[in-house]
Image (cartoon, rainbow, N blue to C red; front, side):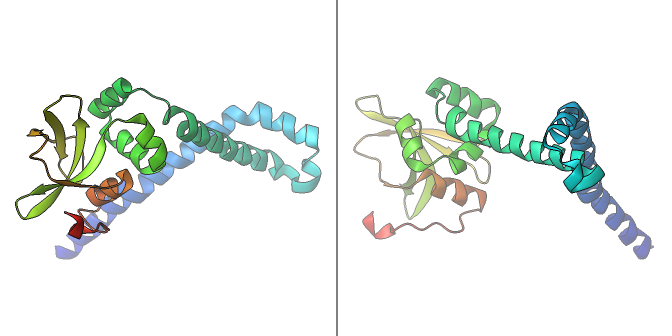
Length: 195
């Protein structure tokens, strides 16, 4: 009975985590290549690639086009879209897609992020320990708003308000905050003696 349970467990986990995702990738790649077929045929004929690659030339051109499209989309995403959205859009995005926002924080350079002036990552001092938190609003003359997320996800947490003279914290980078949240605190490289 135990052997049957083990075999079923192996089958279920292997199917769910390897076979199904692999089949989905193959199916989607096949559909994408099928959509690109008219273009790949024209490119192959124009460059006379069949003489070099033979019948596989259309497939090679199709795969190269998929890679090129992926690179161009990634470039557009990182160098235009992620850098130029407004703070209002950022707040809405965080509300609906916190994982996409976390991806942005990990990919965009720190100096670009600071120019957007959205959230300031900090280690908030609480009694004898520190919490990863974000200053979300400093506009009030007497109060600072701070968001303290749960780890490893940021879509839950609490908002705290501090009098400006009563808050103690260490500034950290956004990459440090995201890495610490995603890895349950591992790898935080901060000089705590400053506090």
